[in-house]
Image (cartoon, rainbow, N blue to C red):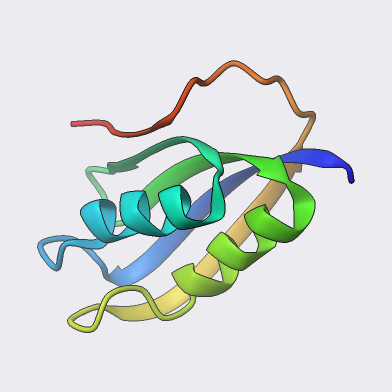
Length: 92
């Protein structure tokens, strides 16, 4: 299995709806590492690393997000795997 890294930008009504905490739970379920944070422009940004199928599962989850979210866009930029994270963290 190939390990990959993805930078994810999620737009819509995605702040103040537990998106980051929910994503941390999803990341833990799939065993991926990285981080997620809110951006000043209202989007959520995440870096996710792991097995390709697991990273893709997290990206798929981002298309819906938690129940209160209204996701309008999910942009993904694939990057080279770096293996720099020991877990998945919510950044403030």
